[in-house]
Length: 570
Image (cartoon, rainbow, N blue to C red; front, side, top):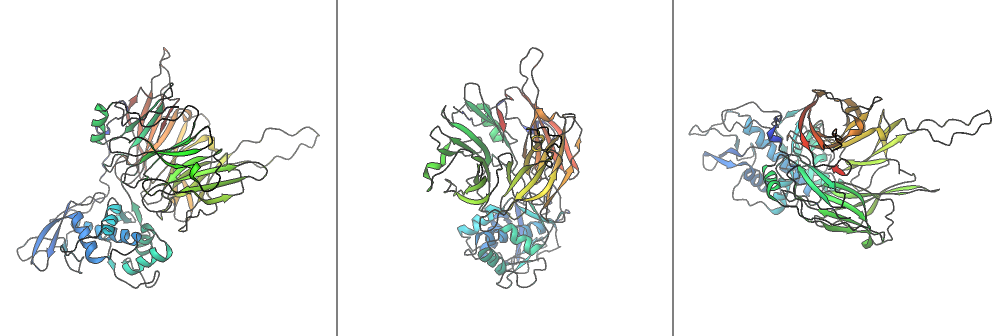
C-alpha cells in the first residue's frame, strides 16, 4: 500500500492567527526600570551586567550570557543531567533579575540586573563554553520552573560532593548534583526537584513539529487508491507559506502486501521537532520502523531506522503495537513495541529500542507480565515528572464473575462487558526497566467508551490524560485525569466555554501546546457527515485552550478534504 506523505497540505495548514488566540505569555513578573523583562515563559533577549573590572554596565545577549556563565562556573566534565540542571538554574536566575530590578546602578547612573561576580553569577567573557555546556543550554532553553505557580530565582552553591549530603535549603548544590546524576542516574528534572523541593517543570510548546516553539498536529490521510498525505495544523508562518507553494511529494511507500501496525509522532532525533514514525510488517513477517523527520515546514522522505531482521534473536512480529517516548531521558524519543503472546501461558512483553538520533538500536525487554493484555490500550507519558517516559495502560475492569445457574440451565456463553477502565502506570526506572503496572485510578467508563491523549494539562511537569468519556446519551464528556505526586490520578471534569455538545462516536482527539503557555491544549476533530445529497462535508476542527479552570473552546475551521474513514491525527 502506498502512503504519500506531503510536506504540508494547504487545505489542512490552517492558521490559528486568523482567529482569536489566548495569550501565551503566562505569569509575568512585576515591571522594573532596568531591563524590565516580564515574560516568564520566554527568556529575555538581553541582560544588563555590571562589569567589575570595567566599572560600568554592559548589555549582553542573554543566551550568550548564560553560556558564558556556564563556562565560568560549571566544568564540562560533569554528567549531562547535572549540566542541564545547572544551565536551567543559571538561566532562570538571570532571567528573574532581568525582570525584578534590585536598584543596582553603576557610577554613571546606568542600571544593571546582575553583577559579574559571585555575588550574583560569575561572568567572564574570556571563557569559551565547551560543546557539552552549549548542549546543556540548548537542551533546557525552553524550560523554566515554578514553585506553587511562582517564578523564582534559582540560586546555587558548590556544596558537598555526595548526593543527599547537607541541606539543600532551596539551593542547587553543584557537586551533589553531579553525584546524583553520576551515581544514582538522576535526570535534570529529578535533580532540580531534589534541591528546589516541590516545583512545577514548565516546557512551553510541547509537540512542536516546525520548531517555532508552539505545538502542532499532523493529519495523516489514506486515500482509496492506497496513497496518503500528511498535513500540518500549525501557527508557524513559514510552514503555512510552504504549504501554499509546495507540490505533493512522495515520502513513503508501503508495499501492497504489507500491514501498517501503527504510527506515532515523537521527536526521535532530538532537534526539538516531532517526527512521524511508522511500524510496518511485511508479508515475510519482518517488521520495520520507518521515520519521516520533521523539516520545519513538513516531513522528509521516510528512512528505515530499525528492522526485526537485524535483531540478534528470532523476533515474533505477529501482535506488535507501537508507542514512543523518551525512556532514557536523553532528549530523544525512543520506541516501545508491545508484544502479546496469548494462549495457556499468556505473556505481554514491552520491548524498547532507544534512539541515537539516526537509528533505533536493538530492542531490550523492559517489562514482562504473565498476562494477556490484548484488550488493553497503551499510551506513553512522563507521569512521574522525573524526565523519563512511563507506560500508561488502559485496562478494562470486568465485573465479578456470575456464578453458574443453580436450576440446571446452561451458563451464559457471553462474558460480561467491562464496567470501567483501570488506568495503570508502569514507571520507568534509572536502570531502564519498567516497574510492575500499578493502578493509579479507575475511570467510570470502559475502554471502548474512552478516548485519551497525553499532555501536561496542569503545567506541573507531570503528563496527564486528556480524555473524552462516552455518556449514556452518546455525548462526550471532557475530563482530565491529572497525575499527582503520590502515584495516583484524580479525575477532573473540564467544562468548556462556550459549551457545545459533542457526539462521542463522531470525534477524534489530538493535543499540543498551541498557545505556548506550557499547558497542553486539546484539538477535537468532528465528523460532519454527509450533506443532504450524500456528499461528504469533511471534518470540523475545534480548539480547546486549556486553562486552570477548564477549556475555552474556539472553532478553528472545516477541512472538506479530510476523509473521516481513513485519516488519523498525530
